[in-house]
Length: 175
Image 1 (cartoon, rainbow, N blue to C red):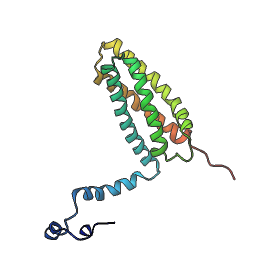
Image 2 (spheres, rainbow, N blue to C red):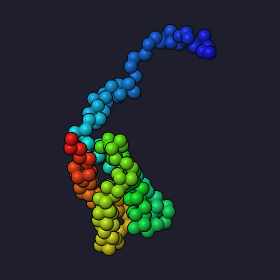
Image 3 (cartoon, helix red, strand yellow):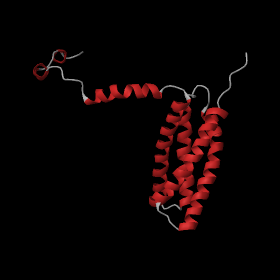
């Protein structure tokens, strides 16, 4: 049962009155048109969501990579493989659910398999780029290593978007 005193306005509320719309509500109101636009399924909006997921999962990659290499003591290549595995599985699931709204059409395993094929190409390419960086400069600076991976991944990501958007999308069933 609700306490009767909670049903009445407090003395402070009586003095202050109704407060104006707060900053959080103003931000929500200002963001609503952008959020409505991001919910659409046209190519440009899907690409925007693809980029947002890519940025978020690249940050996850960077945290895992640096953590495994610097804190965990792994060499750059095993750290890269482990961080890529974690961030790729997360990216595939986020793309399935958020980018392409395909959670009802595509299973988790199918999404991992289809996007994973493109990811293998990216993994070989980024691993080769890291090996080249190490051989050419001898640097093990995580910022430089992550920058190389991000650059290569951006190109692979564009190919991945094309594959997921146009090659692996479900085709309409002929009636």
